[in-house]
Every structure is written in structure tokens, then in C-alpha cells.
Amino acid sequence: MNDARIFAGGGIKAAGKEGIGALILDNPTRKNVITQAMWRAIPDALDWIMETGQIHAIIITGGGQRDFSAGADISEFSKVRANALQARAYEAENSEAFKAIRTLRIPVIAAIRGACYGGACGLAAAADFRIADETAIFAIPAARLGLAYPADAVGDLLRTLGGQMARRILFTGAAISAADLSSCGFIDQIVEAANLEEAAFSLAQTIARNAPLSVSAAKLALRAFESQDDDLLAEAAILGATTFESQDYLEGRTAFMEKRPPIFTGE
Image 1 (cartoon, helix red, strand yellow):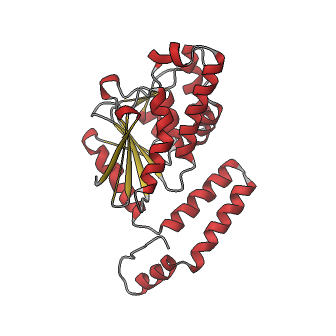
Image 2: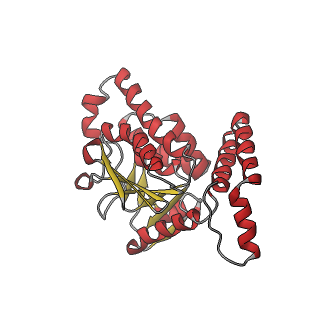
Image 3: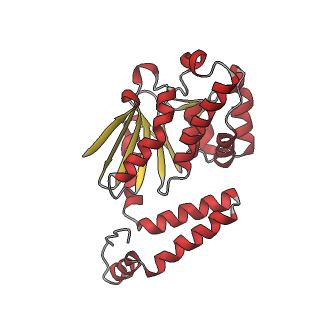
């Protein structure tokens, strides 16, 4: 990609090109485990991607060719969350990463292969779409570690998995296949391993071809209804109303009449 930057000492890679951004959890020799520094860097990396230009969709994936992520780096817990004070601070950093994905004004696609465990499931659940290959496997072992999963992340699991599957993954800590999670709607598409990047990029391109204001208004309205937040709903209505006098609305009508693909600018 034309614009790229590393965060957290290389553990996070961010890039943007031609309307599509990428955020890579890049720690492949350790199954892309997420260190504290990486958790902290995720919101900044997303902000940087958005600042690279007209970005209309972001793909989150793992480095290498084997895993999305095995979740938080448990090997550093004795140093970074050894007591209650540290644990609360660490969880707050987790939650900021989830929130950054959940509240981003553009759609986020998680492209998942191999392990998607623990906190990585939270990142995937906060995204708008989840595309997995046939090797993808999901688990949240928090109960086996004596920890509670972050409450906001539980909300994302409930929203994307449904009540019963959310209970199963949280209460048992057992691994669940992509096929099982596809049946409950968590996984949007399962593809062959060789086709994962292509499938994610194709979806991102489809989104990027549409009017940015329209997509952002739709995402905000969905969030408002899912969260039952009246203030957010009012904000979504205002954003939606801006499309009525936008140049993109004029372009969309004109392109339709001229029987040609529209060229949207986000204005």
C-alpha cells in the first residue's frame, strides 16, 4: 500500500490505499498475540489510517499465513496485570481498542484464519463483518484463567453471536468452529484459505464504491438502534439528513439517469 506505518514496535501495522485501510496484528512467530503495547496502539493506528485520505472500509487481519490472533499475551500478565489496579487499567485499554473499532464511522471487516482466541474474539466481534477461512477456530478462555471478559466486549458478543452462543463461548471456554459460528450469523462468509484476502478485499471494494455519507449514516443508525441510545439516534438522523443536499446524492441520481456507475466523493 502507498501509505504504511508501524505501531507498538512493529506489532501493529497500518496502511491505506485507494479507499481501503488495513490494520495487521503482526506478531506471527507467537500466533499474533496482542501485547499491552499493541492494545494501546490499536486506536491510534485506526486514527492514523483514517487520516491517510478517503478511507471507506478497513480490513483487520493477522500477520503471516496461519492465525488471526491467539488473543492477549498472557506471558506478560505477571508484570502488566499482576494486581487489581493493573488489571483494571489493562482492561480499560482492551475496551478502548474494542470501542475504536465499534465506533469507527466506516465499516470494519475482520478477515480471520487460524486462531481467534480471547481478546481477538472481542476485536472480531466489534467489527461490522467477519469473513473466515476453513481453518478459523474461536475460543474465549477467560473463565479458565479466572478472569471476567470485559463487559463491553460481552455486549458485542451478545449482539453478534446471539444469547445462547455467547453463553457457550464464555461459560465453557471451548473452541468453536467457523461453521458453527456461521450458523448463528457471527461469520458472514467462509472461504477457502487461499481466497481469504480476496474475499475481504472484494467486500471492502464494494463498500468503497458506494456513497460514503450514506454508509456512515447507516452504520450510525444501526449502532443507535442496537444500543437503544436516543442521543446517538438523533445524531444519526442529522447525519442522514445531510445526504439530502449532498453532491453525492446529485451524482447518484445523475449516474442512474445516464446509466453509468456513480463516482462519489463523500461531499
